[in-house]
Image (cartoon, rainbow, N blue to C red):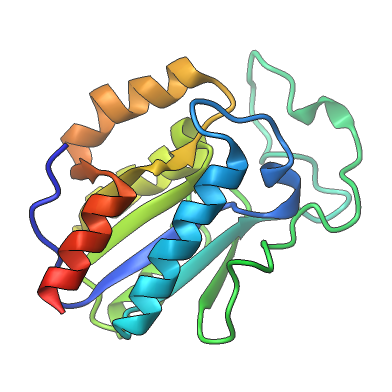
Length: 193
């Protein structure tokens, strides 16, 4: 793990810490631990007057889980989602935060995330959220492609599958940016402010 720098305008981007996803079993870190670590990151970013972006995934009731296309795995089993499944955690959300609603795995495609970040002069993002190998990894890939410096707080994210989490952290993320723990990111933020 090697978080070496935070740019002067770095944003925290939080992926899918919403009621329906926080209720799912996660590994290697329980959702409660991910939420607690992310809340600490968000508080530190706000105190440093840096942007906090909360991303949620949502679909219209008649839309289904993903855009059309062939997949080998079922798309959510066709089960109806409970009321409020797409509501962000109240522990995390503050009025000053930017909110982005996505309809895909990644937070860039089909949203105004890139425009919102660029308007604020953001050159780096720190990512946290669930699921590591889906929403977080997709967003990290797109952020890298958009030219942002990417930092991944690997203990402030988790997955539905521990092996998928490990694959992202060990094989994919080092190719997209820097990885570190929540404590390492907080320490670096404190030193640069």
